[in-house]
Image (tube, rainbow, N blue to C red; front, side, top):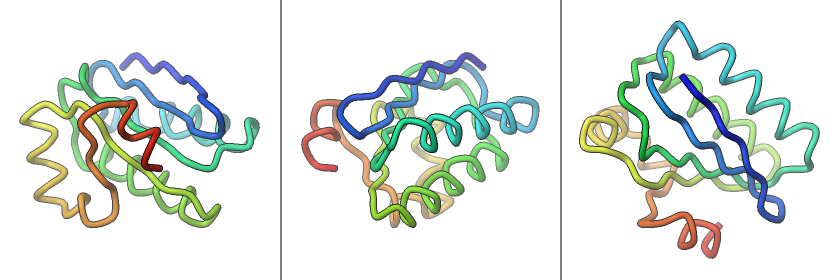
Length: 111
């Protein structure tokens, strides 16, 4: 799993490339949490165009970051999900709490 973190205003954009599973979840969780804590982040966008696979550990990472951001009064969005990851988000009911946007720009404008 490759992770790229980018900040625009008070929004953290997380680019995930590869597989978010039990092997990579803890490191990804720590990196995102450190950025949220150190950079005064309010909102979070997951950019998933290069996400190949996600298991229940990955779902835990996303939901945990949602809870953290929600406590800060912010919002979480997701962009560019492939059909596999989109199906996982649907089946897990994640779109009830995390909004799906068509682009990073749309997400930034609406969060």
